[in-house]
Image 1: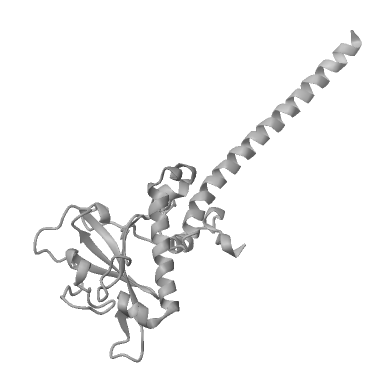
Image 2: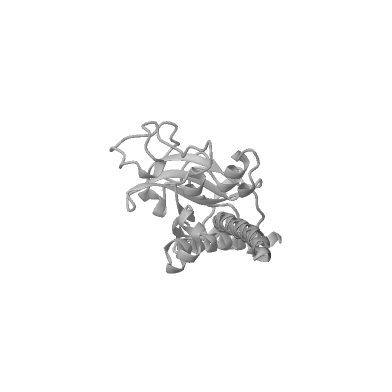
Length: 252
């Protein structure tokens, strides 16, 4: 029986060590699962070149506050504006072709939007906040435009006719942006979205008005009004958390 008294403590020690290792493995798997969920969300944005917003994910970032109206309501969920109301800082809403960052092109399908104000201008898209009567909420309208020093003004909105004249490069850029818009819409609304968690947190693309635009009508996308971009989220994270870093999948 002396050998049994020796083996029992040894067996107990082995059992404790095994249990500790199992606990460590469980913890490692839990951490890995959490990291994969975060990376799935970030990848959903990276795949689309950081042009769309992970609003829900941003809300979980310390120090981040969603864009709000003066009354504290979410920008996209505000009630319909009263007739004749002009929001503070609203740009000119003049019928005609308009000028990027100065005048909203109140023509064609864009004529149906109201209470517009300028949000910002990128290298290829001029973005405006506007009230969508069909969706009954504010949206972000991205209107394609082009810089050109040879014309009277240094920038002009793109139409299907102008895109054809400018050639393959411009047409390719427009096509790529539209494909991204359609891809977002598919990810958010399709049944396969359940297997792609990040798609639920994307800034949605509601409509593309490129394929159905008239020859002289400005081409544009209708996006969800989400606030900040993913690139801004990355730069605002602190102190350099790993869940805010990442590379585009095509970068290897």
